Length: 309
Image: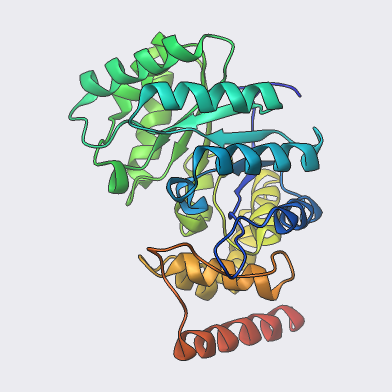
């Protein structure tokens, strides 16, 4: 499998991790989910992300899941594996497993609570040293969770110092000005251009594309919308891209509710036949009757609006 590069673009879907109703890892659904994502035209797949419930998996389960996904993908698209872990030995081991199994690269967020660019650069320098220059790295900037924001200047310095950093997963929130600042700072300093894919469920995708993002790395349960929005925008059809995005916006927004959205995402994937169960490992959200009714209405409304296009 080709390694991830700065030229990456499009939609790298953040994969859900399917579980059976009893909470066991469901590897048959993992294969169905891969087929679902590929069938909707994603450019890549990211596994073991934060919304993929990675912290709830044992090391054995994480290895089983990523290897099953990689076998099913069979080199058709790049696969990125989230390996973030406060234990650098565990991070390094999982990265080695992932790359040996055929991953295109790994994604790392800074250790929670690091304060300031210098601390983050020191930490990421050690991560890159341990992984080695041959392992492409995605830097995940998600300070709402990590409490470790990096500035545009800090990220430019990271790219200068670490050639293995080839992508920024940008999901600061709000972050449109920061995205513009990252691009402007790189240009000002003459730093190589790296790929930027954005998260946050795609909630700000049209604006992020206009600010210089190359695509999305998120897990919205209608990946075909993300794929088409990015394709239309890259074709110079920004208004058409945003018109399409607007049709899905109520569900995008509904899925982004803190502490609730993962249950929505997995239930939509179940309804669409991608996974057998919407089970979320505890601690995690569960849809009640009212939640199911809300989702019924939102999905029916989307179907009507798409039919009327």
